[in-house]
Length: 145
Ligand SMILES: [Zn+2]
Ligand SMILES: [Zn+2]
Image 1 (cartoon, rainbow, N blue to C red):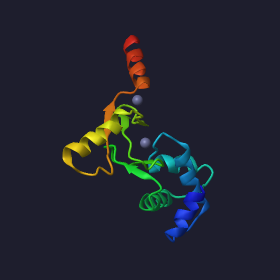
Image 2: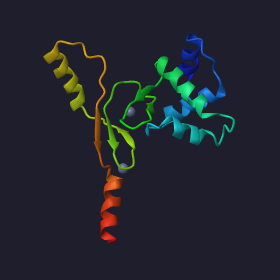
Image 3: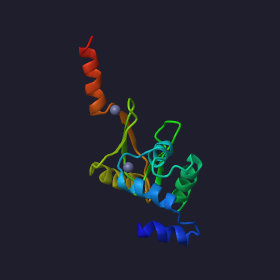
């Protein structure tokens, strides 16, 4: 949180309670919410907050390196307070986005650097599939027939 306030001030951005709330929500979740979802959740406590405020704040956070924007192939972007490059897996049924923690990707980056002679600084890896919850929902729906 100190980091947020410091970073915003360093970038000459205003520190507002709404911005703090948006960042706090992102920092506390691993669900990679969209701007719309953040807006929906926070509008309960911040009824005067607009969707445009959420978009603007996310844009500022992104430019200040406080969050990363994920283009998961839907029309809307998803946001992650974990700014380190890491792979994601996305359910094509319920659209949840999860982190993948697997050492194989660390090896992958060194293999790519070695093979291409690039200093790999960033990677965007997305996997798509059907999550365990949706799989069991689907099989239950089949049983019901
Ligand atoms: Zn799912
Ligand atoms: Zn993530």
